[in-house]
Structure formats: C-alpha cells, structure tokens
Length: 247
Image 1 (cartoon, rainbow, N blue to C red):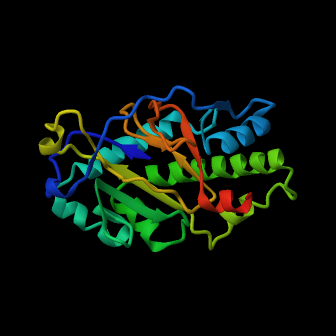
Image 2: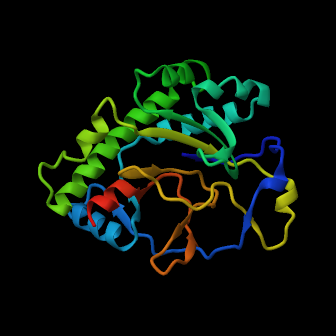
C-alpha cells in the first residue's frame, strides 16, 4: 500500500535521485475477479505485461480507507516517535540491504499474525486496521494465485496458495509513504524517485495506492510508463518466483 501526504519533509534531499517524466499508460489490463473468463484473462495479462488491475476484488473499501487514515496519522508523528517503531518494521531512506537510497519511509512486517513485530505494530502504532487489511488481502492473494493455477492448468490448484498459507511463508506487508521534498520539487521537468526500479522476489505483489500518481512499470520494449492511479482497485504484479517457475 502507498500513502502520500504533506507532512514535514525528511532530511537529506540531496541524496535522492531524479528521473525524467514518463507517459501515462492506458493499456493496462483490467480484470474483473468475478468474470467467468478471469483465469484466461489473468494468464494473458501476466504473459504480456506481468501486471494488471483487479476490480471486484472483495476487499471492503472501509478496510482500505481506515488503514490509510491510520497510516497518515502514524507518518505525521514526530520523527522521534516514529523511530520507536524501528524494531517493529519502520524504516526510511535506505531501501534493502545494499543501502540504496530513496525518498521514502515505510513500515515492513511479516504477515504472520503470531510474530511479535506485527502484534506490537498493530497494538501500538496502527490500531487493528492493519490486521483487518492484511487478512482481507491475504484471502485475495490466495484466490488470485488459485485462479492463476487454473489458467495455467496446474494441479492441484492450491499448489501456489498453500505456499502463501504456510506459517513459515515470507509474505510481507509493506506500507510506503512518500513525503514531499521541496528542494527537488523545484527542479523543472524532473520527478522524484521514491522507490527505484526493481523486481519483487515473491510469487505476486498486490499493490494499492491513493489517487496520487507515481507508480511506474517497465514494458517489454524497456519503456517505463506511469500507471494511472485508482484507489478502489488493486494492481497485481508478477514476482520473480512465479516468472522463474514458468520459464
């Protein structure tokens, strides 16, 4: 999930890279999860783009808006208060173990409800909105990968979902926040890089943002394009594990 707002900017703007503006891509497949042909459409979208928008997904809008409100409250806290959540998944600027720098702060936790990090985060920083959201999105993930298995004619159909259901699964929940950086916003014709180009190692990633643009994907011809935002839908991205398993 992505949250953008207008709290005080983070420090060290000079470290952040910029990129050239991209065109808005209107050809992203839109798939109704309740469509009888969903399995065929999902496989086609994965093969052609590795990415698609999902509607009629079944996750209550109430869960999304409540979590976003809780997230904004958290990210608007003084930095000293947010730093108290560092042992439970809070981070900023650095992305990944290689020390990549982005204009971002985030919460990152494993989705196993029995882990101390998720329990503490829910109880002290984001109420229980995060639990409701995670459970609903996990159910969606199970359904999506089972429909994928049907479309790929993989048996049993739960071959992928049982990996996600396993208590030792490394499935994670990441809440990204991109605060303003006044110094770089003043650069003419340039955009900020909040989270640099990357692929996700998981089977799939389920993304949701508010109505602010910023998400980009790379097409087959290596062209980067902007994804039109839609706060009512989810975007599904094929991860490295699924792609490798089908090559």
